[in-house]
Image (tube, rainbow, N blue to C red; front, side, top):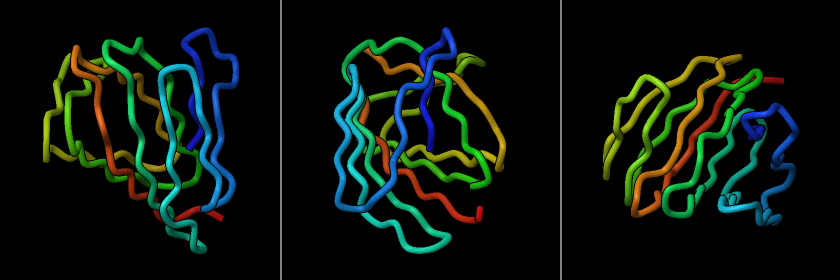
Length: 110
């Protein structure tokens, strides 16, 4: 997954399973990077502004473990809500007042 600030500047990339990237208000914890499957935990700080999340060649399933995320269409996702995004998709979530903890499962890609 690549996160970009809303201005379009690169925000972060995950490359190895044993790497933890600390970002401005978002922490990425890679749990599994095995071929075409990637699983990682993303922790958003409270009221974190919108970020452009670009999925590249992977489709993505996300499960909110705690807190809330609000997508650009205004839909709010709370604990145990999940959604699916196709490959090459870009969306712009932000966290709610309590922040968010999300499990991301990605598959596909080269």
